[in-house]
Image 1 (cartoon, one colour):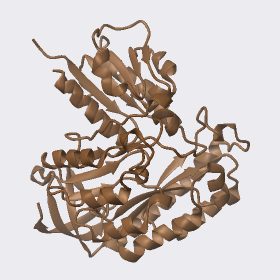
Image 2 (cartoon, helix red, strand yellow; image 1 turned 180 degrees about the horizontal axis):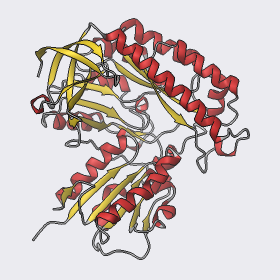
Image 3 (cartoon, rainbow, N blue to C red; image 1 turned 45 degrees about the vertical axis):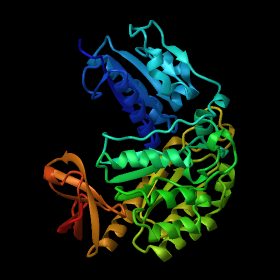
Image 4 (tube, rainbow, N blue to C red; image 1 turned 135 degrees about the vertical axis):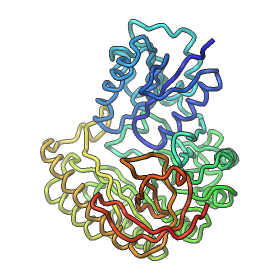
Length: 441
C-alpha cells in the first residue's frame, strides 16, 4: 500500500520554519511520505504568519496553488494567522482544517478522515491556554538548522499581534535545547540558528513558571560547548536584552559567529514611545558601539518599520539620518500595516499608503548602500564560507561567518562544506567573489 503524501508551505519567520519541520517529522513518524509543495500530495499543510498584510494575502494564493496541483487534496492551515483569524482562514475556498496555537503540534490527531469538507473545521484555543512549550528544530530543509529555544512574548508593542497569536513568553529547558543541538550535530549540519519570538527573554517560563531558571547568557555559554557544531548564529535579539556579557561571549566564542540582528523599528524616540518599545535610540547606539569595539568585522542587521501612525516627515528623516550615520550592515524594512486588536490600529495620524511606500523605498535604497559599504570593508580579508545547497543560475552561494554573501561557479562537491577564502571583489549583482585558501570541513 502506498503511503499518503504530505507537503508543507511556510510563511513568515525562522521560528515558523523550525515548527514546520517538527510538524513534518510527526507526519513521517505516522507513516506519511513527505512531498514537495509543488508536487501532488494528499495533504497540504500551510504554516501561516500574521506579521504583515502581505502574508495574509499570500495565503489565498498558496491554497489555490495546492488546489491546482491536486483538487482532491486535504488542506490544513496552522500557525499565527490561524490562531488570530481562524474563521477567516476557514472561509477560504478549499481549506478543510484550521488549527490554532495549542493544536498545531497535534495535527495528526485531527486527520482521521481526509475527505474534503464543505467548510473549514476550526480548532483554536483561547490564547491564555497557550502556556506550555513545544520544542522544535528544522533539519533537512536547509544547510543550516533553525533551533527554537523560546516562544511567545510578554511585550506590549502597540503594532504587534504576536502575543495574541503565540501567547506568553516561555522557554525550553536548558537540557532539552542541548539535547536538540546534539541531535542536530549528528546530522552533519554545520550551522545552527537560534530562534524564538523574543530569545533574549530566554529562561522565563521554563517548567511553566515566570521565574528565570537560566538566562540567555547561560544558554549561549552552554551551546558554545556542544561538540560537532561548527557555527552558531543568534537570529534576532531585542537591544535592551542584548547584554555586554553576551556580546563579549560571542567575541571570544568557539562557534558563535559575529553577526547580530537587532530590531530598532524607529530612529525617533517619540515614535519608539508610541510603539511602546523598551528602549530609546541612545541605547541602540550603545549596543552598536559595544559590538564594534570587540568585533570590528561583525555584521549588524536592523529591523525598521516605516509609516507608523503619527510618523511625520520629520520623524522619518530622523530615522533615515540616524540609520545613515550608524555603523550597521543592512536593513530589513517593514511597511507598517494595521493589524486588528492592536493599539496602533486605533491611533490617529494614519500615513497614506503612497507615503509609506516612498519611505520604504528610501530605506531599502539605504540598505543597499549600507550592505555595499560593509562588503567593501571586508575585501582583502580571509573568512570561512559555508556553502548552500542550491544551484542558482550556474552558481553556488554561501555565507561567511559575518554574513557576507559570496558566489562561485556551481560545484556540487562544495555543498555543506566550509572553506577558508580570501574575499577579492564584488560582482555586478552585489555578491562577493573570492579565492579559495583551504578546506576547513
